Amino acid sequence: GGLALAAGAAAAPAVRREKPVPRDGRRLPAIGMGTWLTFDVGEGYEAVRRRQEVLRRFLAAGGGMVDSSPMYGRAEWLLGQLLPDLPQRDRVFSATKIWTPFDASGPRQLQDSLGLWGLPRLDVVLVHNLLNWRAHLKTLRQARERGLVRYLGVSTSHGRRHDEVARLLARENLDVLQITYNLADDSAEPLLLAAAERGVAVVVNRPFDGGGLFQRVSGRPLPAWAADIDCANWAQFFLKWVVSHPAGTCSIPATSNPEHMDENMGAGLGRLPDAALRRHMQEHFRRL
Image (cartoon, rainbow, N blue to C red; front, side, top):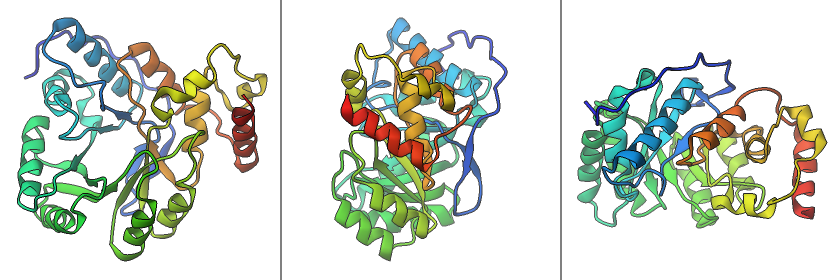
């Protein structure tokens, strides 16, 4: 299978920080990866080779969740091409979405995603941006009974529709919530706490605020005390702040740069900040 590129040698994974999915206790590495924009590429050799290297390093470093969506262009197709040739492909915790206003299109999107990924079952499928969630949660519950989906839930991003998310958390039996949460936008804090109370796993998207956090710290040195929580770069500073939240299960930064993937995966190692240091990190960031 795949595009027959060289798989490359795999490094021995270090011990990774993992968190349990509340529904059944399955442990998931705290640093995952997203594919929005970054994996929407054609069949050009160099573009594909770089994404393969990103994936290889992610899995070799102990990565788990790979998050995609039918609306991410060719991302699901590319994952299906690349994964068969990677030695640690069995580590992948597959996550995708349903996103359509039409009831009947939900089951079709799910079947399309299974075919593109080349998998008999998807680990997580979410109703994206809550679009037509009543119909699609019904579809996903039926798919879970048939063994096509392991966990189901909803996703939103950019701080949108938090009131509706809160109502869904209270009323629906969900396994997973995916939501935006980062040092520039912590508006989802009450929802993270509500999800934890309900036994719902929280997957954090946009942990770098779409790159905005890096622009904010451009040219500024990492504070010396960041070494106390084993941060070697700003990416690890931003990610450790996110994944140290007690309610957070996994964060899914996206990159098309293999070196940046190495930095991201480093956030899954070493010490994490406690509540007091998390506040200090946020105060420091806001002063920049």
